[in-house]
Length: 233
Length: 333
Image (cartoon, rainbow over all chains, first blue to last red; front, side, top):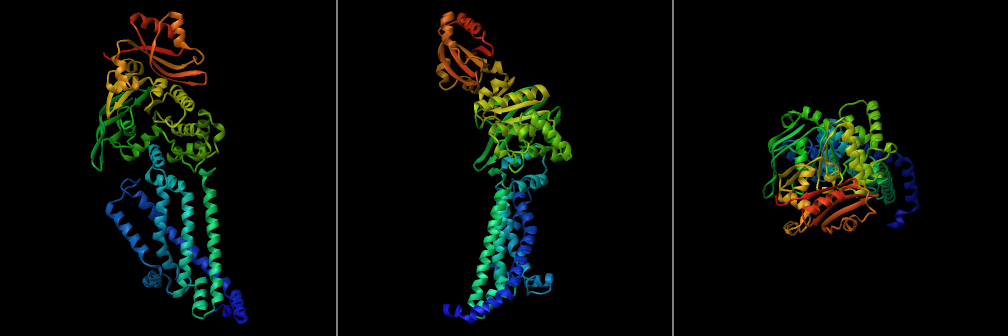
C-alpha cells in the first residue's frame, strides 16, 4: 500500500489535486467553520447566559419549568451524533438554504450541533465569576441586565476565549465530517479521493492540513485568552 | 438615621430552618461609626446585608431616614443602594478592569456620563491616596491597596452610609490600621455614617463610637464602646472582654482594670514594670493582647490589683500617657 501511495503516478496526481483543489477546499473549510461558529455563538451565548442567570439563585431567576425545558433541549441536541443530526435536519436545511448539498448547506446542521455545546461552554465560563463580585455589583445598584453585560461576561472573557477556541476546533472537525453527505472543504476531498478512489496520499494531505488548522486556531486562541486576562500580570 | 426594627431572618437548609437573626433592633445615628461585633456565625453578615436588602428579612423592618427599605420598588431600591454602599472582606473588585474603571463602575451603572465619571474617579483616587494607580489592574495591587480602591468605588456615588463587611479581616495589622484611619477620615470629612462588621475587638476599639454585640442572631449588648467593654453584662460580651479562661479571671477576688492602648507612643516603655517601681503597685497581668504598629501600641491588657485605692492610683498613673485609657471592669454587676 505504501508503495502504491508514493508511486510516481500517485505523487503527480496528488500534486495536481493539491494545486487545483486544495486552496478552494481550505478556503471552504475556514469559511464554513468561521460562519458556523459565529452563528452558533449568536444562539449559544444568550442561551448560556440564561442557564446561569435564570437559575433559582441567579441574578434573574426564571420559572423552573422553563429552565427544565432549556436543559432538556440542550441535552437532546447534544446527544444526537453529528452524522445523524445532519440527516435529521435535512428538511430544515432545505427550507433555509434551498438545498441539502454543498458548502453553504452544511452550515445549518453545524450550527444546530454547535450552539447547545457553546451554551454549555458559556455556562461553565460564567459560573467561574465569583458570586462575591456579583454581590458587590448588586450592592451598588446594578440591574440584572447590567450584571450580565458589565460583570459576568467581561469578567469571564479569558475563559470565554479559551472555550471559544475549543468550540472552533470541534466545529472544524464536524465540518470535515460533513464531507460525507455533500459538505465542501477538506473533508470532502479526503473522502472523495482517499476513501472512494483510494488516493491515500491525497487523504493524508487533507488530514495534515486539518491538523495545521487546528494548531493555528489553538495557538491563536490560547494567546488571545492569555493576553486578555488581567489577573495574570 | 438607620433604625433596625424587630428584624428576623431564617434560612431554609437541608435539615430544617436556621434562624440567622432573631428579633434584632438597633438604632444607628447619623455620623456614627457603629461596630457590630460577634463570633463567626453570629449573624453579622446577614444583618449588614439586610440593611441594603441584599438579604430580604423574614420579618421586621429597616428604616433609613424613616423610609422602609424593604417596601421600596426595585427601581427605588437601586437608587437607595447608591446612597448605602458597601466594602467587603475580599475587596470584590472587577479583576478585568483597571482601578480607574472600577471606581467609575457604580457611576456607569447610574448612567453618569464617561467624562464626569472619570473626573470623579480621579478625585477619589487622590482621596484614598493612590493617584498613580489609575491604570493598574487590581491583580497588580496589594490587599490594602485593593481595599482602598474598593473604598474609592464605594464613595463614587456620594453615599450617606458605608457598610464595611469584615473589611480589614484579610489584612495585616499595619494595613488594617491604615484602612481604619482612612475610614475614620471619611467619616469625619464627608460625614458618612459607617457601620463596621467585625470579629476583631481591636477594630471596634480603634475606631467605633458605639458597638452592638451579636450572639446567636440576637443583640446581646449595645452601647458606647467604653461602657460595653468596661462593664460587660452578657456572657457574649464577657467572652470578648475576657479572653480564654474568662471564668477563672472573673472569679478571682482582685479588682480588674482594662487598659486600652489606642495608638499610644509606648513601645519603648516597660509601663507595667515602671509603674511597680514608680508607685509601688504590683499589678497582676491577667491577659494581654497588644501589638506594635510603627512606634505605636494598639490593643488591650487586663490587670488585676488589690483594692479600690490601687485602682485609682493605677488609673491616674497609666492615663498620664496619651492614648492610654483605663477602665475598671466589673463583670459581676
